[in-house]
Amino acid sequence: MKAIRVHKFGGSEELKLEEIPTPQPAAGQVLVRIHAAGVNPYDTYMRAGTYAVKPPLPYTPGSDAAGVIEAIGEGIKKVKVGDRVYTARTITGAYAEYALALEEQVFCLPEKINFAQGAGVWVPYGTAYHALFHSAQAHASETVLVHGASGGVGTATLQLARAAGLTVFGTAGTAKGLELATREGAHRVFDHAKPGYAEQIMEASEGRGVDIVVEMLANVNLPGDMKMLATNGRIIVVGNRGEVTINARELMSRRAAVRGFTLWALTAAETADIHAGLGAGMENGTLRPIVGKEIPLVEAPRAHREVLEPGAHGKIVLIP
Ligand code: NAP
Image (cartoon, rainbow, N blue to C red; front, side, top):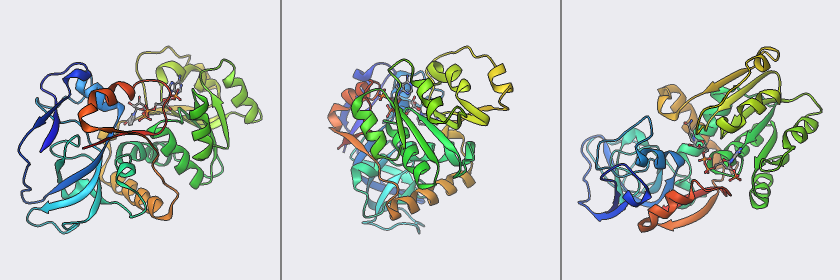
């Protein structure tokens, strides 16, 4: 099979398309024929060797894929050959024609979600769900600011928050991103590339501030986010790419909290909760992953460069 392999940590040029043997599932494993693989920013940090999790080399990147069960090992009960699935991690890596996964890493992909969309489920929607419902413990009567609403996690957060009844504010840095955020559930949108947008957010909340911020770039926005919070507000740090200085007094006067997490540390109960919520949302049509770009697998280096560029528009997915 064809697969992207990384033999040493480094730039996007380290992603090489190679021919390797197609793996066969052992007991408790399934083989997925991959139709699309999701590209997440963390895939680039891992490839660069700067991420907290360093896979043994060589490795095939990617945790998010959608496809069809090609073969099953002994003892598999949850799925059968021919079933449509999305993956939440795999054993052998998603940037390939086939991937081995554990039975507990594959989930039914509803008919109304196509494979490219299915490749944008696990990391973006798992993160959005965990941020809103586990970490922030969001309530329908609250206002959430999705700070970075045009990308994978942002669009997922908009859809989940809107479906749960919250008042939803979103930001993006381009006209196209702002349009997307409005379409995917934001009641109000703001341009984070233009000075003065924080004041506009305060005005939109009638001076009260927002209850929750889901933050995609904390190293840039954390000090300003703290000033936009209502009493008992929560900032949930999803993305961060550097250091930042804050004045903790902004939290004290608001009885506010800053929380962070990584998807790697989810408990089994949280994971079960997330997949139940995502499955139901995809079934009932409230969750519709947004695919901005489909890129051939061989062009994975381009996908890794573009996922870090400004002007996000939903997900970038690779097509084997
Ligand atoms: P993405 O699809 O590339 O989207 C990036 C988002 O950040 C876009 O909406 C972009 O908006 C926005 N952004 C850019 N500059 C910004 C600014 N100054 N202020 C606010 N937002 C800004 O990435 P993603 O998949 O949504 O992931 C977002 C971040 O979360 C990444 O850093 C990723 O590594 C991290 N993440 C963390 C976890 C976790 O477990 N903690 C899980 C998933 C993702 P424009 O392009 O419109 O400017």
